[in-house]
Length: 85
Image (cartoon, rainbow, N blue to C red; front, side, top):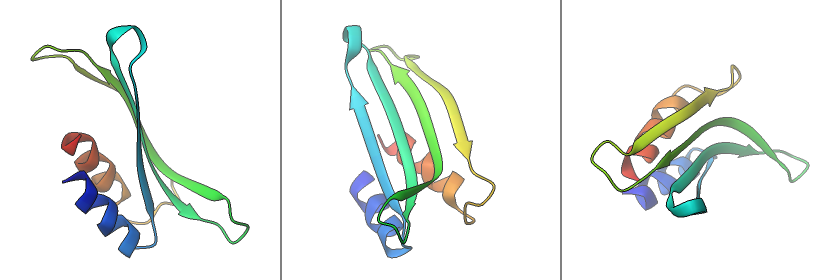
């Protein structure tokens, strides 16, 4: 499912990436949506940060941020990708 969302983002000229870590036995996550800039760098359009531990109520989403200049649908893309993870 996450791969499908990455492909859909790519079709719209966006880059969707998930970074996952395992500090202290917890899962940490950072999901970003960006757009390539003409300089070759990336322009951040939105992100979600959170962490999880192995329990039914173990998902904690700390921050969801969508930039005012982001195209419509970036927030929904971030939310869908987070839930797919």
